[in-house]
Image 1 (tube, rainbow, N blue to C red):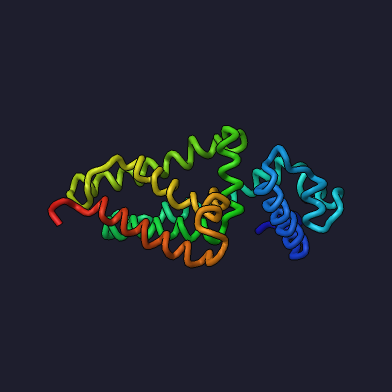
Image 2: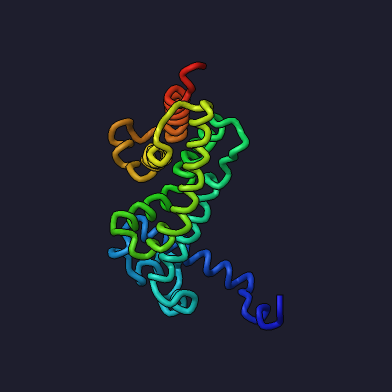
Length: 211
């Protein structure tokens, strides 16, 4: 690190304040949506003054983009980790469980992303059509090779990935609907039961016919 870089580096207190602001922004955006959220609401949630918040982030757009970038980086990791040399079925089931665990652990982040997509992804479309598309296409090729080798049942690799996103993120994005149907109690058991169902469903669907 150069002296110039060191001079620009955030102090521990600055990093803590940025994290505090982003957590408040995440809470506000996930509850109100981007358009409904205001800087005043974020500042109040953070327990800071509005000018203090604006010292660290120039606008709510900057906060929103920072949150989405963090989220995409974390969410793409499980997809990156699918190993072409591993057992195909186990690699896919592991991916499903990691995505479901993210829905369990990061429901606010999931709703933030869903809201952005529903608005047409104006702040992250460049990432979706570049980094995300490239990674998904790469893993779809891996899955297609597994299918050609007869290691998993035939399917459309892209739609397989889409279906995994839909079935796992549903438990965060549609939490209110799930609670209305299943009741508000025993959230952990609800995710455990979802894990059993989803892994069983995909295992049966993807198991090669000759097995």
